[in-house]
Length: 599
Image 1: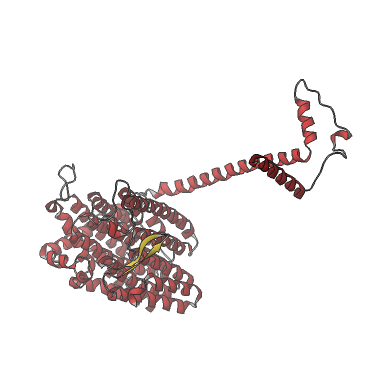
Image 2: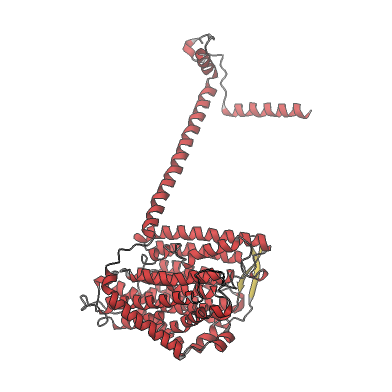
């Protein structure tokens, strides 16, 4: 029975119930549905497949392998925690319904067995997440429009790649080709998916959108879109690609660097999504199975600690109403549960030994260091040294430590507590502490995580987490981050004015879009005016042709027109008939002409 029901079905049904049921009932149903997906992902047999047709093409609606199973497990697990958090954070049923719709469509994408089904749910994922952003109102409406525009463009490019793939292969099925093939489709797919994962230059929607909606909505948003993008990137490039790997390294540095300049708490966290997704993209780009396993391990771990960080900071915002880190401080004494949750999330994302981020990030960094041994980097490529990617990931790691030392310092330590907010509610603290415990458990027991990953045998045979060099590297990154932040703290506080490209891009899109709308509407209005004038003139001429024939002839040189009696008004000999009679006469005339032609 469990293998015959795709996991998106119960979650979308729960979304429909949450939209109309009492708030408590809707959240309870949503929790059970998402938790059930997590359990089902562990129990459903490998190789489960539901084939069908979509728009007349052969498709696979539901396919289970090691990759989709891992995604379903973590999507369901964190979805359940986020629903509990939403309920205690006063999210209403309709907002949680939109969130569950977002979860359901994401599940549809990662369990798809073909490109057509994936892109179908990909577009629905963009719609449901936009609705989740919009629902909060206020500034989220404008950021939601920009979000929708970015994902509309990205989704269109992905669809174009899928069409090219069909032309090349003759099928949408994953099983018919090794990833995306041909000269055009891979480029389109990399760019289209690049929007979702936050490639540099295509990333502005992310820090623009995630700080604007309800705090509980941000918990959902930080999980699904970018990680579904990483999954799709692997499906498109299962054998990796050098430039995808280096884009991942650049993302790791860029995201961490921009995060260091932020004073908005959720905007800082949002830039670190870009940075951490960079490690995943780098792992997909490196060609080894171990790197791929590390990338998916980092997907799993990142979802845990990033959701935990958004929940912890969300409680601070919920209790204080403040989003600027410079306006709070000393909260660790008055909000101890929230502080402990934040500490677990910050340690995990930074890669502190003993936490889950150290495990998966370590695999990707180690494989980047060994790229020259596996002939990934051609010698013909200038400047791209054998350890460049490794250095990018290391610098990104130092920036991560610095960012979360900064966020924790200003929110929880800097100065005495000038306000005395309550700590997290029980319903907020429970999912936070549960997720934090998982971050610690998977860090202390990496073998448990390895059992969930694809290529488990490769990981267990080729990688040992707790070796002296690995632990020393993690400690060295932490020390460098600590020294770096406190030595540059004053300098960083004076550099918060440095803009991202959205400072130019957002106004350009707004005013450019408005100009385009005005141009189109004004052009249409001018065409409409001309059409109305022509039609009106034709109606006037048709109602009194003799008068207009006389007026026209009178204007022609050398022609003297004879004036009509009665001042040009129609006389009794003018023929005036009804519209019905006119239509009848025209039809009969056409039928007569047709008869003559046929005879």
